Length: 499
Image (cartoon, rainbow, N blue to C red; front, side, top):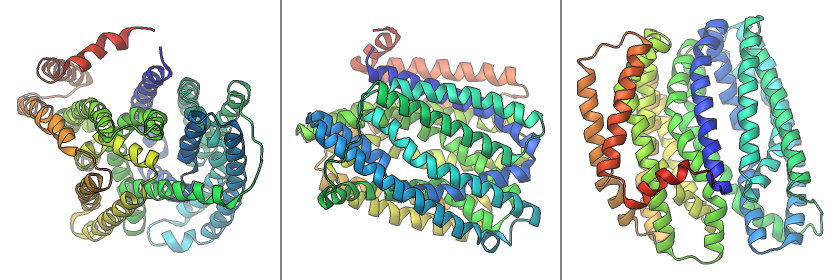
């Protein structure tokens, strides 16, 4: 079984575990922390996530450059590159501590209108722990990136799975013993340190990597940052898309509303988790294809082949949430969180096509042409966040979600013109294979099940599971019969093989 196949398999095990365990743990955490403190916990996490962007995209840059040096069989270049990135990471860690301390002493000014005195005290403690976590996690994450650059996906993903299982058990124990949000932050920091140590040992012992500074030349630094700066801005855009709303609500609303919004964003973000787990595995492959000067037709073919599979999978998830999302929210939490369903749906609808086209971003990374895509996305999503800010007053937290979804949609439309012009990609082939050959059948299935759901009352988890199984069987059978091509059908027995 290839590393990509094993990596994909483990990625979906990881997603299944994180989503299922996350869904089970979330109401448990809310019950023990309380809705207000849970909102505080997610608010500070979202706030600190912006500081994590000081990574400047170096992790993705490591994947790309390591894959490039390996394709060129340039071991000296790889050693020098890794040594230079460690020096850069050292500077970044110092910068994180400095910026973190400046923000720490200004938290009261930022959140004085929305947080109580007690909440501000806890927020400041959590913030300090988060800053320490980031200062060690960003350079530590380089070792996971090296594994991916070497196309060794199995080990880091296995470590993440084990980490998540043990961490989940620890969370339950911590809360049962009376722990609070500060305890959760400390717990996550401990597990991050353990994962860094595990990845470091694997990189040195198994991959035999070496850090050796042969030269510290400005052209290499320029090349690194000319690539990574656009990864950095792309990460900034992702933060804008899904987490800026929590910061705005932290300024304009209260922690109870932040908790409801955070749940909706978490559920809507499941699409990104599922697609990203597969798409990111293809960066080394796409990089090699570009370096070896693969034709644009081949790139479009690969993008379409992956895009069809992604769209089918994401349609299944979105459809299931349309059909069963509302009773799920009521059974999972309570009627106070029903707005989370609308927020999740708005997020999912805006993301499904961009995520299905995820390989286009990998092609741009491999070609080092992220600049204009990033600027377009940054502009559109900033517009969406600003729009959401003004929609909060008339429409509440739903208004924030509307603004965010609008920014994502406008960005997707404009970017497709950019792909056509800059990359010379035949996007007509891509959209014909998705919008004409997959979307109609998916829409018919989902619409039919939504109509049927109106005549079904779901009051228990057993009824929920039964209807979910019916939906899954009908969707999968119809997709297999009317949508899958011969290649896609051939993957079904291939996936079940162990070699």
